[in-house]
Image (cartoon, rainbow over all chains, first blue to last red; front, side):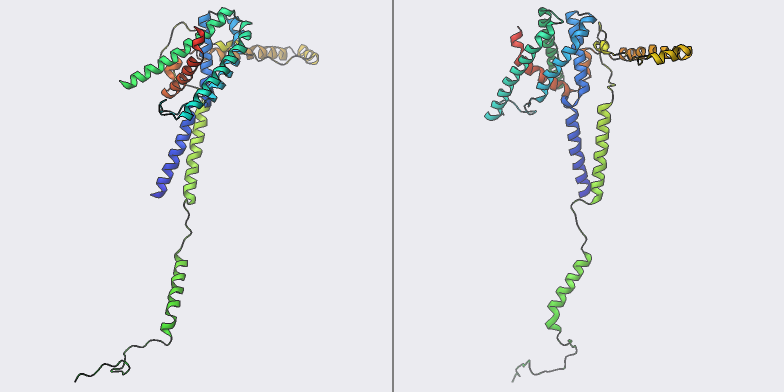
Length: 153
Length: 175
């Protein structure tokens, strides 16, 4: 009996570790690649870019996207199921500092890549690209809300 | 008159006899025997016998192999909704055609002397890029809606958290 219990605990532990890793975006390069592909396609659609321009833009955007992702994936998220009110003052302070730090980093990346984007796109198009990205983010959040709504029903 | 009982005066002869020195050595003999029995019956006990370790290891190996197979497998999930007006895969331009190695003057002479070999080489150099291009063209043309529909709740939640943090960070300055 004791043997089975130990085995079961070991198995559950392993499953938790494996499933925890599988759900993590940083351990899923395939999903990251799919996302980048989709973003590039959406940008092409929004900016009405020809293949020639996409050929030039794609490598720059991929590098930019990879740098942005590295910041997002490195951040320490708030533990699941915890509300802002449940955080201690120290934890909240750490999170705010990290968010502000990330804001600076992300802005720096965009600022650094702006001249590179301008070698392919006009300034107006770069602005539209950033707006297209924002639109994608909004759609992701809408999808999340839709699923949460479905779950609540 | 009642006669007083005197232990020193044996009334009747005792029917049992005790070996000489029995009571002096009984404690020592009992403890010795107990030790002997304990040593004979005791088995080495460990919290985790090897069978448990073997089973746990096999479960771990199975899980690890399964995970890596799953992680390396190409995604086979079909999109739930098919959105119209899709564009060609953006990665197509990144296809680098596989070209045949450059022909050296020495090899050129050989080719000239052997027209059949030259034809075969020409065929090979023509075939390879075509195959590479076809492989990329067959890739899925996934839209954002299709991608989102194919993701699990946890994955969408993670993406939404990232999106929300960027909204907090950046979007106010975009307006």
